[in-house]
Image 1: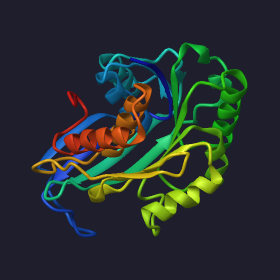
Image 2: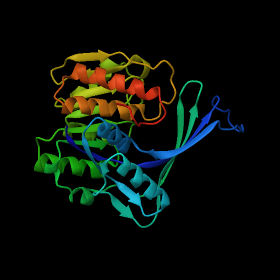
Image 3: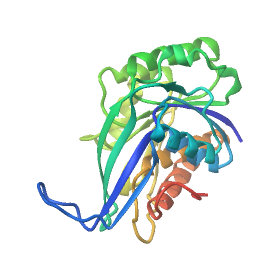
Length: 285
């Protein structure tokens, strides 16, 4: 059991399920609607909490009804939010999500009116209280300063970085972490093994992992060993929302338990497959 700090965002997710994705300018009726907390970092922490770890979130919220809803959900899942910065104005990041019940795909329109978690906020955290630090690959300038502080203050604490989508200068973060968690979207247009070998030239110190959807996932260890795990799809794909965040939690969980990379990859793929067969992230274990 590890004590884990996650830095990133929490969102309000408004999820409409439809019987087939609508054409542009069409009007369709949703078969179901669900409103819940989302956000990559907090999703990963919620899964890690269910796997037995003590989890803390560093992020920004707002003093309003939806912000309170987010904090209550995190409290329900035993996520410590003492380092969250509460703004008096603005709106929590909101994702409007269409889930196609025929294949489980999800399409997201995201809106935010809230500043990011900053380096000055991060400085207030006692890093020695944690066994693992996990960052979303966003807010690159401030995140770079946070990672530099980690290396200066407590260089032996393992650090993971989620790289979900291309962002300006995000590559400057790669050399500052121990585990890089790439999405298939970020690797788009590349063959997975070649992509990981290319990334290793930028981050030779890191374990490199890339989820690859229906093909499972690939990883490259620091010694150049490539490994692969197949996907473990459910009998029926119900909801893919949060599958990548769940996969990341599986990797972190295994590595915190000192398991090797092939074991971590298989565990993460199994967990993500289980998530795709259910709605939401609760009771994944």
